[in-house]
Image (tube, rainbow, N blue to C red; front, side, top):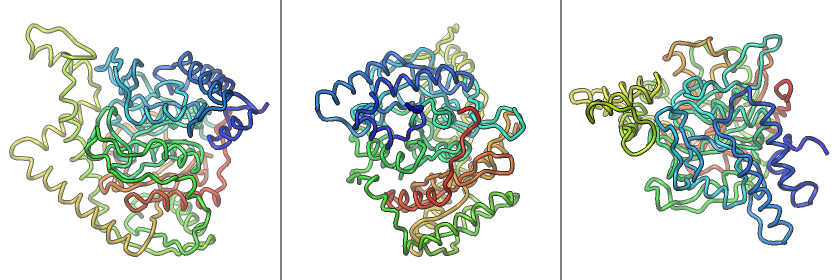
Length: 489
């Protein structure tokens, strides 16, 4: 039998239904490959015994002829930002040492109710703060891709770097991610995988460790648009435990993949031609537009005039919300506690030891912009600009159905190629506007650069119109025909 780890979710579901292999065989194939790929450091916690037990339960359901779920027997990795009952949940941080939730996040509950098998908890930037997976307390995740003729370790993107690396390395069939400023789409682009951030409110945030509550949104990283559609149909839905979860029907996104984009209007925002954009990225973007046009879409130039303010706006709002959310980690109720001579000293010592450098930087920025005398000057202004960015998109979507842009300004880079935090923040230049506006966006692998590293193209859709977004993304995927794999995978 061919290597089961190379199947897509859609292919694996067909194989399981036809009894070509069992869920136990599928799970064991991934566990074996995980052992061989430990050098990637993609998993913080592996749960092979739990995975085998769930796979056996899935096989029993199929053997008995009982009802099976939409993901029955499919082995997934779970980003370690999702609380999982009885399983260590770290958020990539020292301050959550030993934290084993007594509850399950809504998204993982939905996945497990649908029969999914959890292989383990995936590494990430600490509290999802980063674009390279360099800030995790549990060490860097290594991208399975290498530059041609160069063995330098490259970043897998962040914060969902463990998720993207695991899917690319075939040590998870798909994975959950979260996206606050691009943390699904950027790592998907850097690893040759597909990642979708759904509309804000489409998936429940209950049980996900919060970074910036008005921006965070869960979504899948997988190997195809179809697999993302299958995953998202399960993950999405109203949750009364999350006040920002929207009460509306969830379509069967897979059924919406008709392959027909004739008449679709695709916008090309002129403001996304940023200074310093590589010719390779620019050429790929133009090629993507031609691919869609050849399938019957209409290409239109559009304007999103407040795009240039998106990054500074994001880096005021996100740290402000993070500084508030992370105030709960004080060593009193769970996680790390460093003893002190007083309660205040215990707080100070615990937080000093428990948080990493990047998290401290963002807490300080957030505390500053929320402080008396600066709130109006920074935070309030940022919220006003956020409203203008949303208006830009609202106006644009009067003329187009989807928007095509690059996913990232570059391919994967080395761990020491980019040490300036401000330069690192620029990694999100094409993705943060989507979070600020609460819209859905997807990254699709579309080609290789001159060093044989994957590059992605992003498509942006109207709020709660993931069906059109996925349909157009699949058309892009079909034309790109991206079949390259990391060496040795």
